[in-house]
Every structure is written in C-alpha cells, then in structure tokens.
Image (cartoon, rainbow, N blue to C red; front, side, top):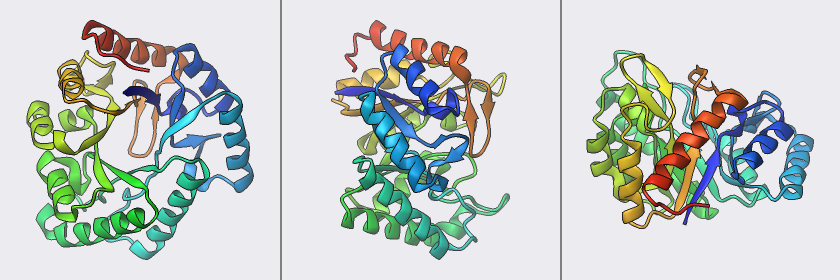
Length: 274
C-alpha cells in the first residue's frame, strides 16, 4: 500500500493548522520534524504528550520521526550526537512509529569524500546496530554536501553496513540539485528504497517545484515503484517557498499546489494510494 504523508511544518508551525490543512487534502500521516518552530528533538515532554494526544484525537499517525540525526559535520562529536539519537529512538517508541529519517554527515567543502568514508561507515554502522536492537528502521536520505549525496555513496553506505534496519529515503530533487541523473540513481538504489520524499527541482531556475514540474522524473519513478510493489510512504517535502539546510517552508496555499500535483500524477498513472 502506498500512503501519503507530509512534513507538516512546511505548512505552519501551529500543529492544529498543520492537521487542518492535511485533513483537507485527505492526508493522515506526518513526517514529524517540528511544531511551534522547534525541532522534534528539542520539544519538551509536555509538548510531546500534548501533540500525541492531538494526533490521536484526530486519527493521525506518523510516517517517521523526521530527525536531524547525521546532519552534523563529520568532525563534530559523535558521542554527543548518539545521545540525540537515543532521544530520537525514544520518541519513535513514544509515538509508536518505529521509523527515523537520518543523514550521513556533512563533509568540509572541498574535501575528498573518500577521506571520510571510514568514519562515516563506522558511525552509520553504530546507528544501525542501535536501531536494530530496538526494532527501529532508519531511512538514509541523500542531500547535497552530505557524504551520501550521490547514488554511489548512498549505495556504499547501505551495502557496507548491510543491515535490514538501514534503507534509503529517496529524494529525487536532492539528486537533481547535485547533477546526479535521477534515472541512474533510481536504477542503482531502487532495491534499497523503503521511503520516498516527494520534492522536485528545476535546475534552470534553481528552485524547488511541485512534483512533475522539474527534472525529478517523479511520475516515472512512482510508476516503477508501484510496478515493483512499493509498500511505504510518499512524503511531501515541497520546499516551495524556503529551502534551507535544516528548514523548508511551503505555506498552506502552496502546499495545496504540491499535494494536488502529486495526486494528479498518481491518478494519471492509476496508482492506488491512501
């Protein structure tokens, strides 16, 4: 089953408005990155309890904890970051969502990625081992400037760590942004894709655009995924207004453009979704 989800903080910082807008589009899942302008890992216990109650009262669920784990420089302290990771896993249990989005560490500009490979792989193996011990799946997202920004390095991480608890969160726009041919990335990685971020990118204007309006080949990718029996989430992360390293914003009106564009693709391809 293909299920729709969204980074709801792209709509608003207000959790009630987030749910209202998503309900209007028939979306009942959230990739939990932030509410009240505060990252998911920095919210208080009271805020988490209140948000979980709100989700339950409105029959919403989480597709994953949209954590910033792995989104630090490769030369920053990993021990401190592991404490953040433990917190992310605690939240996965708290929300009964055994799925966490992760990254594979920023490299200093100009460095040869190969010089950081051993450190990245050691860290990713540690994350995967800890997740496996708690039955939590990690979804590794590709992003510009991260070790795993190219398909070859994403594959290297996943294949070397070789854990059933580490898979790929495929983001076509992020591949377009670094000049990676999306069809090549998909062909290399599709056996490992268990999560899909719906974001498109127009390299001519250097802006994110609704699905199908850029070079992300999203329609073809979703058709192939459906033909392969993809069972997972399509997570709207439009970034139509703001696209920063740790933050994206779209707003309620532009979110409608993003949601409608994705639904149009699915309907044109006769791909069932919920």
